[in-house]
Amino acid sequence: MKKEAELRLTSEVYARRFLDYGPDETVITWAENMTLSGFASDSLFILLGEVGPFNKFEIDELLDRIHYELQLPKIRDKNEALAIIATAYVQRFIQGKTDSADTLFRLSQMYTEEGNAAVIGDFYLLHYAAVDLATEDVQYYWPEAHRGNIEKVIQNQCIKWLKEHRIAAWRKYEWAEA
Image 1 (cartoon, rainbow, N blue to C red):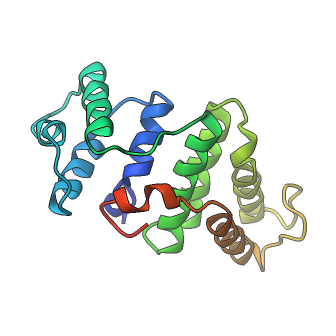
Image 2: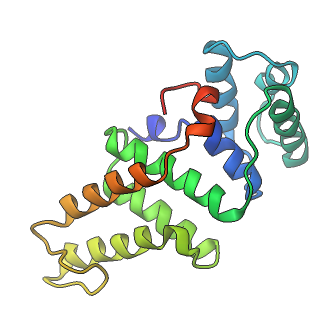
């Protein structure tokens, strides 16, 4: 399940690039999936030949050239980039490719790493509500959530998120159905 949960969408790759996250092997897997899906770009083909350890500056330059060559949408600000990444994580959870604990943990980490970014604050609160309810009878992070309904609350919030955060501008550039 872990490997499938790390398959990044185009929008997510570029949101991570916008936030200046370092490259890892998932960017090569993304390039493979893009070419297998019919996307073509000289820089995309060059990226396919890269092997770790990755030089951040070289990978960033390739990603920038791919962005230009494929005429991908532009990400305007940090909140948009965070929302794109959160949407990708939530989508994988809803599709059953990862579980709620992993999804919420990663998003709560991102929340704190990005200076308590309000756009993804609900995931932080849901994460700690679920953590508390794993060992306690009460939690003070999410109203109305208790041991008997926490998974349903998480799922409902994730479905609501997906409805509110459609990434339509990126849809035609994704190697998989987003």
